[in-house]
Length: 133
Ligand code: MN
Image (cartoon, rainbow, N blue to C red; front, side, top):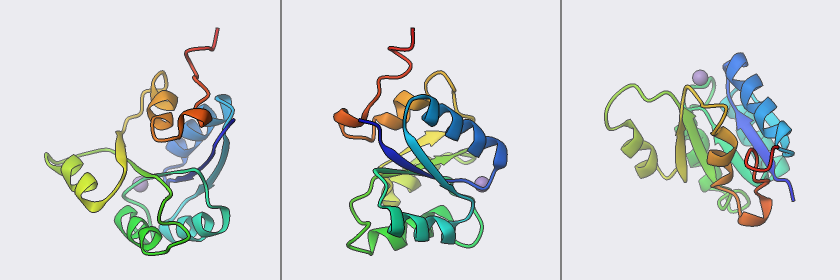
């Protein structure tokens, strides 16, 4: 069973790539390009997984996390930070803030889907790209 995945990303090229990879794997993808829109869409759609850039307009990734975690309707949705870590300790900060995990940019197109699916229940993993050929 495919998953419904919300991507919150303000970089058009990154968004396009991540959308392409997840759709190719069979998932249903929606996207938001700022944190405010991301929170609204998460509340409306209740996706199975949210992939969230940290540096986004309106609300940053940490604020998105905080808003969704403080709302009973969205509290249980896994939220994974997708970001370019610039300083040592950034990864620890992301986990301490309460993200379920992180994926580092630049993303590896060969591995990205499997890395993202790690945060989905086993029944929603498509196995891509292992069963690709
Ligand atoms: Mn960004």
